Length: 130
Image (cartoon, rainbow, N blue to C red; front, side, top):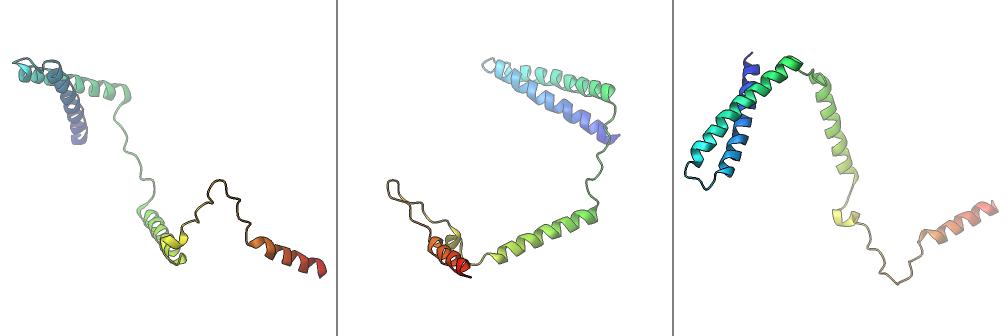
């Protein structure tokens, strides 16, 4: 019950702040701007409570959401994720600069032939003779 009252009060406070800001902005140059903002805030609080009550009347009390995973399953999932991340970090030797892709050729220059092409020709020739 306390949680429901807190939710209604927070909804009212949120609307009160919004309408107080609107009142302050509309009457910014007026000498009674603070009083106007307080009035707008009071009406906003009442409107927020009314909206919360209407939601409660139309939809009923919200049911608490069940936990997505039991705590043990969630702990196992976290451990597996951390172990996989640690294995990935160990599998990549060298620095980040070593893993950086080579710079592309400048426009207008012919693209270099891949180095694996002659080796493939030798392998295919060996397979053909066997």
